[in-house]
Amino acid sequence: MGSSMKDRMHTGELYLPTDGEIMEWQTRCLDRLYEFNSTRPTEGARRQAMLKEMLAEIGEGCYIEPPFHANFGGSHVHFGKNVYANFNLTCVDDTHIYVGDATMIGPNVTIATAGHPILPELREKAYQYNAPVHIGRNCWLGAGAIILPGVTVGDHTVVGAGSVVTKDLPAGVVAVGNPCRILREINERDREYYFRDRKIDYSEMV
Image (cartoon, rainbow, N blue to C red; front, side, top):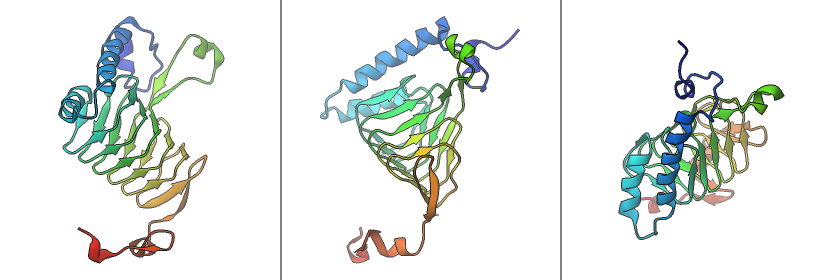
């Protein structure tokens, strides 16, 4: 007997997201997400408690600025420690999304795991497949970046604002554009300057 549609969400096989079991579960997840997005800024403790229930994993010191959008309410989102996500993070979390410690996510970033066949006849029937996304530790995803299904971003890498990441990126690089390409490695100049010609004053660092 073949695997259920729900099981196929995580195998990369084609499946139907309109399956009754999936949709019932998804609706419950989205109800909880709606509650999270309706919290007040003064309800920080409640937000943290909700995120621990909603996400697959979430380490200490994480912060997600509402509104947060996720197909399954974060059920397949794994955050390490001290991850920060600004307004309008969209996680198409039909399968797993992994984000390492201390990664910063700018506003309006999309991390997508879901894809659809190119063949029109299959799309017309609503078939879908999913591929997990892995974001390393201490990365920075600039505002409006889009990370596509199956992509891995290495540790410490910076993805420029508005970039569309279609392929894996190694650790320790600055990558920009559509499609996203490596601009350069993080280098010694970055130890001296933090923005254009502005020098880092290490005497003021805590």
